[in-house]
Length: 281
Length: 311
Image 1: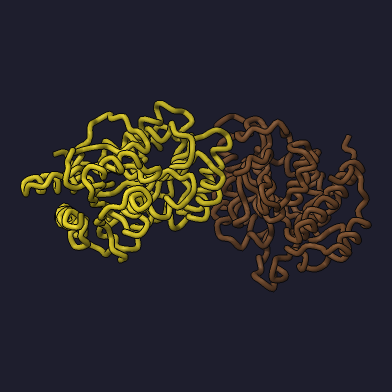
Image 2: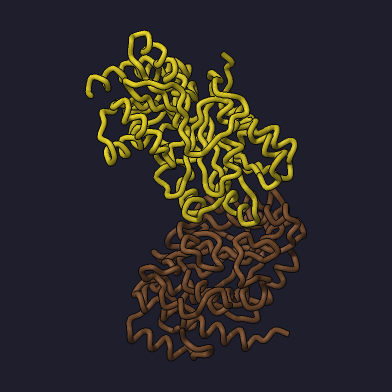
């Protein structure tokens, strides 16, 4: 039986980690990180079969790739809180000699990360390769990815989206962080994605939509529903409607916190809105 | 002299790997015939991935296949193997230190009639600038086959460059290819000729002509541009005290540039470079293009004399 309250408590702590990491450097990307906190906690603390005794080849494990690498704070927090590396290491985020680079990297040997990301639009292609490797290895595990919605403006995504359906890649669950915002404004202001569901469907994907992307139970339900449709010949995508900056009132409803850090006063407000459930790093 | 294309050497190497290394997988972006990957594709359909005309996706997939223990070999033209996907290679292969072998055919002017859009002459420079990337440019069919087999046993990213036309196949069959180990083809005392790829044969022809003219040239095949065999180069230069480099590539960023860097640090020496001089190519028969743009034994001979005069 899933303990929703426990997952929500972890999420609250992850939010604290995110704002504290970004505040400590006056740099980083809190908005998207906060919006995806429930999804990331659901994956790492409930859904995925994964091993914190990290092995790069990931054989026999579910794999996760973060394609929109700028939301590294949420990934680092979830990896540390899962036990991949000490929680205290979160304090090194974006500092000199850290393994927690501004954007995720393998170069410094940070456990849990299998591919650098940051230059957008590459994660789904990488996932396609790992999906094929899993099929060759008779490995029944699943590959999960997360993509920004604005990121789908990069053409390489559509190469991979086309490849997946044409080759019956059915061990992928891609999720789009559908917060409708990017650096310069709303998706529609910058470059509309049009009918994203229809686009995926016309490319041969099975599409799940979840409008409550910051509700833990709804997030778990949609991932589990998607999981039950894997291995049936079709690639799967979840359009997860999230709120950028979720959980911190002044960061919600705007794209302004995509890549801006809170000041001391703003940090305190954010922390007051999110209880310290697991102990700050 | 037997004439064979280096791309067929790649195909033969891949065929060998198909039989001997089950972790080797291959990806191609709609150029199976041009890359000579047909045999591998036919005999190992489960390990062969046709990605269509989508090179960015191909490089990403190759990086992803290493997560799962595979050794991916990607195949397309040199232009689409490098410039078109430089960011993908930089982030997902080089920076992520993935065991991907980027195999690039139709490099250089000798692609011929398709013209400058496809005649990549900047690829060695682009690839050698990536930290950790091994860059190999073999000279003939036998060496390309040997290099293809050898890179499967090397853990890390590799760029393997070869070409389209049939050229003399003069190195030994079933040779042992050692990454980063330059090969002495001719001993000499007056000038060192360091050549790579198709220009190695031209260097050997230059050696014969120079000998007739009483000039003793040393010819060294630099099949691996990175890591460069510094010792072999420095030992030769200590003896000859002047250098000619020869390559089917831009002077900026090519083999000559690498050797000039080494010598300026370690042993300042007159250097002449036979290379493309900051220009694009054009359509035409491969060997006529090489003549027009000055990439033949004739220019190597002239450069050797000039280098000697500068000692």
